Structure formats: C-alpha cells, structure tokens
Image (cartoon, rainbow, N blue to C red; front, side, top):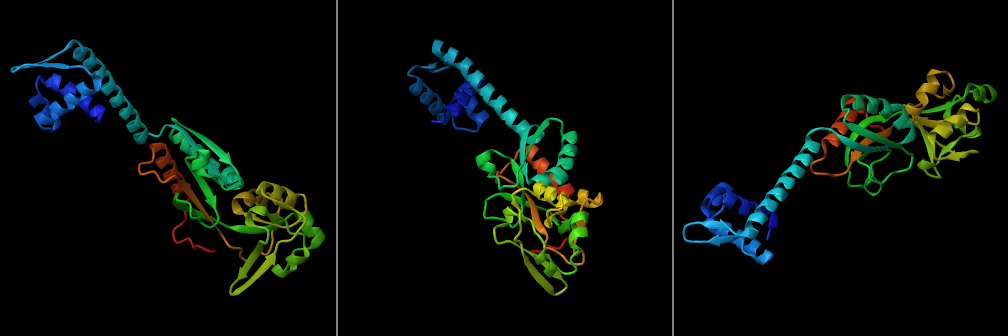
Amino acid sequence: MDKLRAMEVFVAAIDAGSFAGAAEALGLSAVMVGKHIHALEVALGARLLERTTRRHALTEIGAAYLERCKDVLASVRSADGVAEALRAVPQGRLRVTAPVAYGAHRLMPVVAHYMAAHPQVQVELALNDRVVDLAEEGFDCGIRSGPASEEPWVSRPLARSRMFAVASPDFIARHGAPAHPSALEALPLLAFSAWGPDHAWRFTRGAETLHVPVRGPLVTNNGQALLAAALAGVGVIVQADALLEPALAAGQVIRLLPEWRLPTREIRIVRRPEARPSAKLRSFVDFVVDRLGPADGEAAHP
C-alpha cells in the first residue's frame, strides 16, 4: 500500500462527501477509493468511517486521523515546493574543485561575477592539483585538466590551456637562451609530478617534432611551487598560460623558444550525472562555459 496515496484518497473522500466524488476528483474508480480507505483501516486496526446506505460518517478515530492526514499531506506539499524552488532559483551552497593555478587565475574571477549575479548562492572553491573524486568528497562540479578519463561525469569543454617554457632573466643571463629544444637537455629542467615520472616536453615547429626528457634537480606536484623555483633561477619550467601570464607580463620570466609550440591541454568542467541538476549547479556550469568555453573554431591539439 502507498500510504501517502491512501491518505490523499481518504481526505478527498471526506472533502467530496462521497467515494464517487473522490473518485471523480482523483481519476479513480469508486471501488478503488474504497480499497484505499479499507487498506488504511487494516493497517491502523481501526475503522475510520461508519458506512450506512446513505452516507459515510467519520468515527472518532477517523476524525482525529483526518486532521493528521491533512498535516502530513501539507508537509509533503511544502517539501515538494522547497525542492522545486531549489531547482528553479539558484540558491544554497555550491562546492567546486579546480586545479590551483587555473582556479586562482581563471576560475576565481568568473566565480566572483557569478556570485554577484546570484547572491543566494554560497560558493566553496577548493583548489587542489590532485584529481578529486566529486562523489566521494561531496563536490557538485569540478575543473579537469588533461585527457578525459572513463569517469561517468557530465563533461563540457572549456578553452584549451596553452603551455609555455619559461625561465627567469637571471637564469637566461647565466645559461643563455636556448636556440633549439635540443639545447634544453643541457639545462636544469624542473618537473611537474602530475605528468608522470617519465614525462617529456614535446616541441613542434611545422613538421618537426622533438621530445625533451625532463630530468632535473626538482620535482613537485604544485605549479605555483614550480613557478617560484623558476623565479628563483633554479631552472626551466613548462606550465600553463593561466599560471604564467602574470609573471610574463611583469617580465619576471621570459618565454623560451617562442617559435616552437607545446601541446595544448584539454580543460573541461564536469558535474555528477544527475537527470535534473539543481538551478545553482546548472546555472554555474552554463556561466563558466559562457565565459571560459572554447573559442569558435578552436583547434584541439593533443
């Protein structure tokens, strides 16, 4: 027995004054109305109605039970209304995760504009260069970098991230600017551990491609730490434009081999595969894609 449905039928029968009236209001047969009420009586172990040939009158238990049924059904309608409001109007806490550099330099300005547009949403932005399990750690959505995995997330592409090789002016003054990628092998190259222990930088120029193994004095899992090391003149790094552009603009680092291209990295925003995502999640993803999505005709380089 669907008890909520049976309660609804019971209340409708009393409001209509008859089983036939309730049946018409609910799109049921009068026999089915009687079955719902009988099922309630069996479950309660008490009669709710005194049945006569002319009318059905509430018993004392039936009258008390009727009021409680109305309270329960009102609470259910209220709960449904809250859920519907959450789907319709962006509100509540939204938990987002992103890589450190991208989150700080690309995503955070967008989050600020989103919060101004949707003041009822509180955003919790967690920055971390490891791959975060959205479901396990309770995040609504996240930014992913690199090749797509087999995870069952709903994914939408953002503008790809350009990668640059850079070093500090002091480092270049001491070692000279490399004229060819092969010259990098004689220099200290600083590694990003998230790219794997045997990572190589792949430079292309026209039809020419050269792989430079990254074997140097420092390995770290944090792009900000790599940039700090480069600023200190420790060695050459390859990192994303989101991290490097402020330092490049300030002249703190210099781009090496600008006529050569490094592969761009895929960036996407992912969310859990909900059939009906909340308004806050749906609106946030759309907002981010609108501002950080791929440009028309953007090439997808591996």
